[in-house]
Length: 557
Image (tube, rainbow, N blue to C red):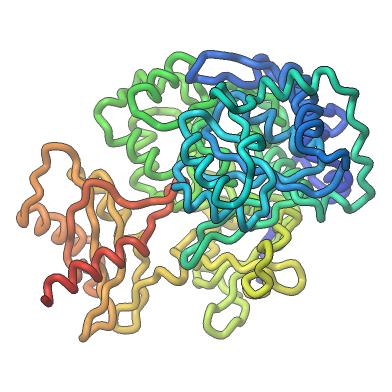
């Protein structure tokens, strides 16, 4: 059974998605449908500096000309990979779109990387240059040295002695002649890489996902159409989610900019400055990940008046249960809470909550020009009933090109006919209004099997998070002779809650009262100071499994 979008106003068609332009043209050329930009387009919360979209366009052009002068070897339009290693700052849009103006590819790296992790990405992507930020320069230089990028091809967004800055490149480019047009043929946008984004996956080293210009353009238009076009009043948007991650990169940097909204760039999350930023700039639209939503709901420092200007909150990258959604609405009456689901390989959004059909716990409904289906992960047979779990497969114009230099992984994930395996177990249900919604059960590889019965960690985590003493939680399966596996919980308690056996018993009984016997925390509860997660908020269960193995080994010695 194939599912499509139940929301088709305004209507989006394939011929409305240009396939012969770069993202530079898509963002800056009004012929491609961009909304009139709010002024300013970008605000850097760390400095207070502002920039309009026109100022960004001019700076991007000069930067591209400077980059070509310094890095281009006189060969315009040839493929080149440019590494980026920085937080969300004011120069990021210009660096991104200047690279695209040249027909080159951005490979964005996590600013929390060690030099070894950064070096792996730079080497694998064959990056020829690296843009960074002076506080991260030591790591950047070490990684660049390891892979053979000379120091004169490391550039800083601010200023650092001995290194060219973005401003230096802009000054160089301002003196250069205008670059020729890229003049792509129809279909070129579908094959030319805008980004080489590295996906952590669940095992092994990160894989480079080849994201085309067309992929990002398509998903931007899918997002805009799903949101009803440009009928809404322009607003101020939180730009906290990192632009190295596909969520922030596509949904905020591209879709929100294309929609004409102001993006307030926030380099990192620190609670008190974050709250001050919300208040100072009267931010109305939040894009968050579940841990941050939970923090807003549960941290007593965040008072309702701090969120007085917030009209909409969007959560993605990991499931968020109905209890937390209700708690947010209780704290911010009238807020529109929306959830979505996507992945790097679908650049980005697959489903999203529609403002006219809210259903707590649902990841949302399909965007336009896309097909979804569920298959049995064991037999491969298509699921034909509602409320029946299966692995989600996706087909649409935003599905990316595959994994860079990894044919085996590409063949395993990207299937014939344009379908992609997500690795997520989901169910489709009909809302009271009759619209189809996707519910993410869990990562297939993360399911716990207790005596042959499947237990979803996310279900138990949501149960624990509803307890007033719990700040955060993660659940894994651990080996058990009798049951095969049993659930074990890692819990972060609120301040001043005692880390005692009595607290553990209280939490275990809390779950026991609400869940079936086979879902009880028979593997025990362990307290942590922090749950290990990726920057996008996904729990690093692999680290927790390793932690349990080491603990189990020490106990046996």
